[in-house]
Amino acid sequence: MGTKEQEFAKLINDNQGLIIKISRLYTQDSEDEKDLFQEIVLQLWRSYDSFKGKSKITTWMYRVALNTAITLYRKKTKSPQTDELKDLHFLNTADNDGEKQAQITLLYKVIKMLPKVERAVVMMYLDDLPYRDIAANLGISEVNARVKMNRLKKTLKELMERHA
Image 1 (cartoon, helix red, strand yellow):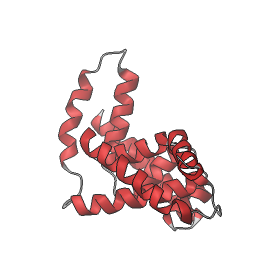
Image 2 (cartoon, rainbow, N blue to C red):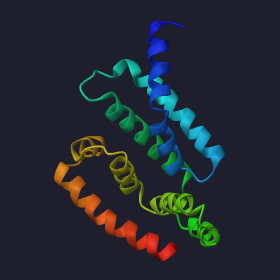
Image 3 (tube, one colour):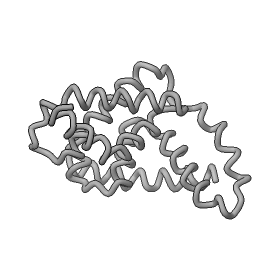
Image 4 (tube, helix red, strand yellow):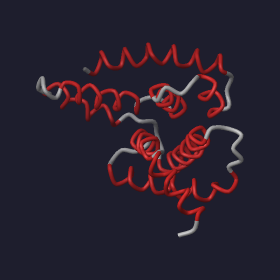
C-alpha cells in the first residue's frame, strides 16, 4: 500500500465517527447505513486528490459526506420521513438504566424527522463545529447558520417532549 493509500486509510480510521453519524442520520436501517458509509468512503477517495487544504480536513469530509448522503437520499426517498413516528412507541418502556440510551435514541429519531439540511445543521452543531464551518459546509452565511440552529433547538425540544 502506497503512502497516499496509507494516509487515506488513517484519515478514515481517525474520522470514522463523523461518517457513521452522517450514515445513521440519513438512513432507515443498518443495511442502508453500511451502504451509505461505504459510498461516502468511496466518494472521499475519489475526491481525495482534489482536497487542497484550504479548509480543515474534517470540514472537507463533512462536505463530501453530506453531499453523498443527500444525493443518495434524494434518489431513494419519494416522500418526507413520516413513517418513523411508528418506531417511537418502544421508548416509553425503557428502564432507568437505559434512560440515557433511550434519550439518545429518541434524539436521533427526532433529528431524522427534520428536513435534510436541518439534520446536517444539528449534526454539525452537536459535533461542536463552529458556525463558520457549518455555514461553509452548507453554503449559507454564518448568521443564517446561527438563526437556523436557534430555531432548530426549539423544534427539537418540542419534538423530544412530544415523543418522549
